[in-house]
Length: 325
Image 1 (cartoon, rainbow, N blue to C red):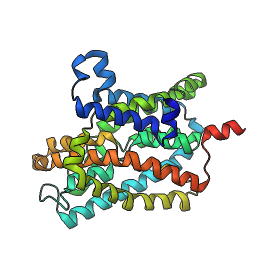
Image 2: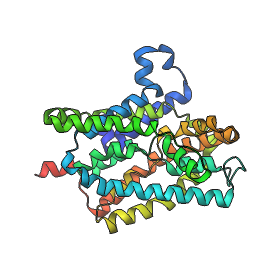
Image 3: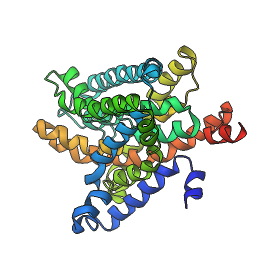
């Protein structure tokens, strides 16, 4: 089974996610009815813990001396993404109306568009850089996780529409990262132990993300809109960030492709935002379905694109390079 999963691009993440989504689609709530450890491990309720643990472990393997290189590479790419998200969300609202005013275009509201365009799947990033990147790239997992929390799309809304920003979700992501960075640099043996846990935890992340997806609803209610959002996501985001990484930073481009998929955690964000703004409630359902479709589609397409790109550029997998040495 493990060999089969590794043959598929991003398989360690993608296959558990799809199996979990199938279970949730045809037997919703089945695993949750057992409660206790089963519910914590095999439902979406465990997502926060497993993502927090991977943030901690990935930060533990990052040598503080190389932190500057991570910020120079992935930090710059994330700043470019933030700028694009602000610009594209503002443009969408200027062309098709502010959130709560109309249904946007192709049934895509400003709510759904903004949440999707702001999304980033750190688990997919980790899977892609583990397969085609360099060891140092793994340490940026926690950094990419900062853009995965609900605070980021809420931040975009706050900037464009006006309002206050809750910093607590951002701090909640930073604390595990800083703890891992501290412990890993104080004790290299612990850094090695925790760093080795990142790979085995990847399937658990995939499973927890899939546990929140209903495949039938995603296709039935969000098919057209989700497809359009996904296409726009690739066309408007990837070329710009890829240009910055390959031409400006003179890097491989794998990090850009790694951050180019919609996160499962984003499925819940339209409802979270709508709770704070009742005018968005009528748009939350469609936005949720469209984003769920986008999660499934980009989770399949991004690994395929990354594999094709890696082969074209002659980027050897780390394990292959290690065997040759």
